[in-house]
Image: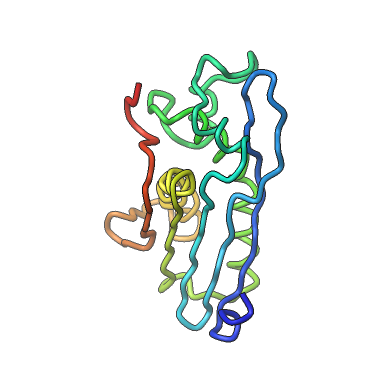
Length: 178
């Protein structure tokens, strides 16, 4: 980190939980990734870590029928801002849901604090394995739900190409995977 700081990069972590929503499992506080910003190059990089704990593996294999009685995958999917008819992997949806507020709070803080040029800002979202699955969800969420707050309600990433992803060994997190 110190070497990269000398080249203009700043690093900030965001929090969340692993192993959440699984019957008889405890929540485990997790730092699912970090945000790197480069003010001169006007770049934001969001990085998610891969599986590294038992709770992460619970997330990887969590199925809808294993959720606590108070949750449903449709409810979580809607809370994430996706259609309730969309199929998102249960474990990844829950893990992303439980980090989303922390991620958004940090992004809003960095945008305000860092004096980034929003008109020319490029976003990269990346991760490996579980991190790649979370990055896939984050790319869609940031492009559809976060950036329109700054770019306007008509913002379309398909036209602007501001949010870009680089995922390594991603699991299938969307679509009918059962």
